[in-house]
Amino acid sequence: MTITLLGLSSADIAAIGLTLRLAAATTVVLLLLSLPLAWWLASSRSPLRAPVSALVTLPLVLPPTVLGFYLLVLMGPDGPLGGFTQAMGWGLLSFTFTGLLIGSVVYSLPFAVQPLRDAFEATGRRPLEVAQTLGATPWQAFRSVALPLARPGLVTAGVLTFAHTIGEFGVVLMIGGNIPGRTQVVSTQIYGHVEGMDYASAHTLALVLLAFSFAILLALALLGRRRMRVLP
Amino acid sequence: MSTLDLSLRLSRGGFSLAADLELPASGITVVFGTSGSGKTTLLRAIAGLEPDARGRVVFGGQVWQDDDAGAHMPVWQRRVGYVFQESSLFEHLDVRGNIEYGLRWQGSAQCEPGALVDLLGIGALLDRRVDTLSGGERQRVAIARAMAVQPKLLLLDEPLAALDFARRDEIMAWLEALRDRTGTPMLYVTHSLEELARLADRAVVMVEGRVAACDAPDLALRAAGMTAAVDRLARLRSA
Image (cartoon, rainbow over the protein chains, first blue to last red):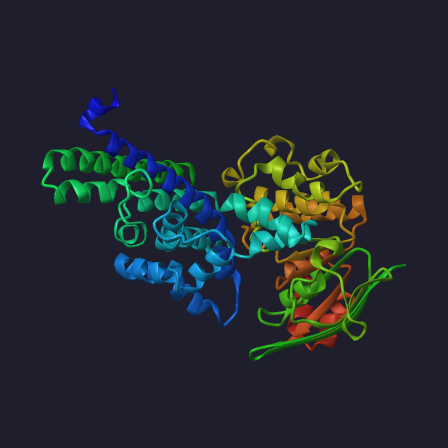
């Protein structure tokens, strides 16, 4: 049975499954959100650009516990988001998968926005001007030129978001708790093992996480090298 | 005969552009001037690429811009071809993809890129990646891409500046062939007297953001007070 697989318990397996689901959902949501945001940051001349840029980078330097704390307050029964979700009859988001998803999106925001913004800035305005003189509307030019040219940035953003969400701990603990099967992800499960002095289980799961994260970053590095070899 | 009528104003930082012109829409009109004289800005404003430009642009009776009447036709509806100084090919498409790019937005107004490809001698390049092309090849592909959508007016911004002398001669020959075969009027920006001497049917001389003269090349240079340039032009032509 799965219980003996690599020495992982069924709770471990559930935590891995939930972690992968959370990371995948976060990546999808975040890419959709980051595309317009990164585009705006790369091309806008608005005075709001600097403060928005700083805001987007904030999760990079804040302790995850601070982020998680604010999100918990926001989603709680007295918070504005909590009040809204209760009024809509959805209940509270804290200690749910949706709550975790929102937390992960905020937590990984800079990892998705920055590579996309760099890619859009590297492309510059010129190819879009060319496209428009050839009859493309700005939206058509974005889809047929800016987006394909930014594909390396899009891949980097996706991979980094996925990997970063896998490694999330502080935010999850603050807003998700550590509920088996619902909000217990790999990182919090490892924490649980260590707290319970079950070092053997902690070792196994930690090794899985380490190997997985290394494999992702290795793939990204190899991908980047191949891309460079293709260019002149 | 149709004309290009324009009256454009633009100020940005320490630079201001004030251009009033009425040009016949035929042959090659060379916009000549030193760098910083506003040639490129004028060309971009005609294409609709300078959102801060104010005034009027009417081409062949069609109003492209008239700020008094609140009219502004966006770039993608003006049907101008634009060739930039660096060829600015789409790096994610091959040569064929670049040339055919504009056709997908054109609806029924299809043309036959085959004839154009022959005219510019790029048939053998169609399946190449654009980053494997030489500078001269890139510019030819860029010209073919702009011409494929059958523009009413072709705008060229120093298209030879990034090329060596041998390539310049070659591209100028392609441009002359293009003018003679398609009849598309061209507005050609340069600071090179060689290109002016060879290509210009008429010249617009720009000085510090203003149109100093618009006439036959030698007359325009004389009217703008560029006497040394007039002599060199005469020598280039007799050579």
